[in-house]
Length: 243
Ligand code: ATP
Image (cartoon, rainbow, N blue to C red; front, side, top):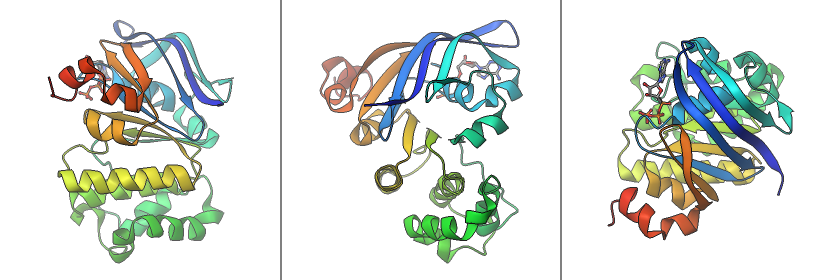
């Protein structure tokens, strides 16, 4: 199966001094869901920002190694260039524009391909009917779960090839996590969107992922098929709380 993304020995430094990624290597297969798990501060968000280019906006830099998207080197490309290649990051904490309506937020997601706006809008409303019901409402008035849906929907408006999702389960009740993860799976299967999913909710992520990596302190410490990791005694003890 073809790799859509490959990180090879990536080092990331913030402010020219703080080494956060210390030789990280991983691959994401085309059309699959790959999970990246690990405790707080392991460097998961930094990994996504290194891929999306957002690192550059925080005075961070890839100082060693390579990031390949469809075999093209993209490390330290600007965020605009990365979006145009088809990589879209949904940031942690549902960053929606609170003073814009739901539909205006979705329009912002289609700035790279405005002519597909109407078609993509229908697509997003099919996955998230609740957003259609609330399309004229200010995004700031949406519930936490609806804001997460809007953040994912806005990313879909850009016709991404690779979606980088940062903790979509954060702060959501278990039933809602299930609902959102089921929609992520559906989008992955029906839209041929590859997904790199960062999560602290290891169980929810492993349930929908094909392959997973576990990182600690800026490096990958374990990897395997998601189903195998779910049954691995160490993973059960340390990451699933089932010791
Ligand atoms: P969390 O689940 O808490 O978001 P994480 O695994 O996503 O954790 P990161 O957010 O990537 O981890 O942070 C990894 C390390 O990098 C932390 O020690 C953090 O303090 C540091 N770090 C993150 N962003 C910056 C920044 N802009 N400048 C300096 N250091 C940073």
